[in-house]
Length: 203
Image (cartoon, rainbow, N blue to C red; front, side):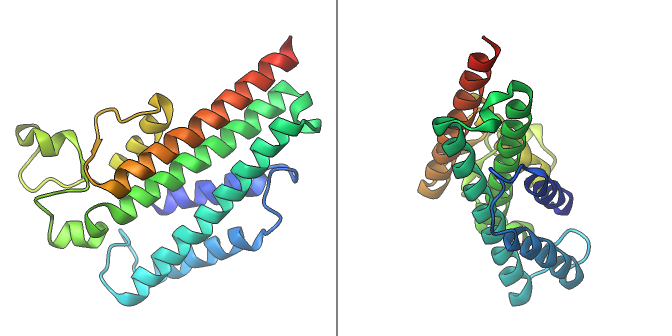
């Protein structure tokens, strides 16, 4: 999870000025929050305490705002056209960076909220999960007491963004359905606009 956050912060920091949020304090805040979170709960970052929960929520807010701003700026630049839209290679690189950042942020959100969070899933796994993984619907495919880890949510984030719909993980509750639908919508907007503009530049 910590490595995924570092990737998001790095990708956002490397974006060109026209797409990178001017409020760079969001990235700085995310970096400091991650350091504080690792210090407060070294290892898997799953210790149950009010401080860890607050730090984790603040980190999600900072990353979410940065992703929203960069996505909005990218879509704006693609619609109105600027120097970024004149280079297909640069456009594809920037578009991919924003798209990957979004998917990781959504994966972190799924990981943070599903079943009450990672700590709750570890200590008191719910018989009725918010997200149904194949191991939930087919228990014979998993060892006893199986529960999803971050890589499962990362896989969910990317497959949902690529397929524009659930693949092997089914949303069972309203928040999960709304979040997955929103991610699919954002993904198709980014990919559609970036590819269309790149094809236009090539032609």
